[in-house]
Amino acid sequence: MSAYALLSRRDFSFLGGFLFTGILVGFLAGLGAFFFQMPGLALAVSAMFVLLMAGLILFQTSQIIHGGETNYILATVTLYVALFNLFTSLLHLLGFMAGDE
Image (cartoon, rainbow, N blue to C red; front, side):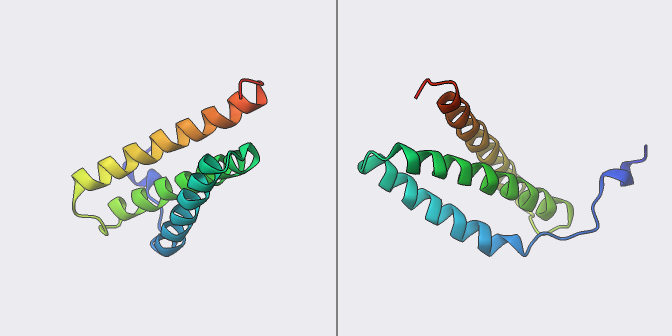
């Protein structure tokens, strides 16, 4: 397998605005779920963040590959935070399914 087999020819830069808006709405909904003690909304926010963080990983990786991101430290931190948020959101969802809520 050559090194070029892992490259995608698609540029996912169009996801930037959608991801920014989605993360902002998710953050505000998470604050609402916390202050109003709504576990259903907290689960919805976790599910939303799973999808948003998967999209953010796709977007940031595309930016790195296609040259849209030149600050590699910021790109690395963004990928790390996206993976961390993805992991914690999945833990929240799986903990609820196991009855540990």
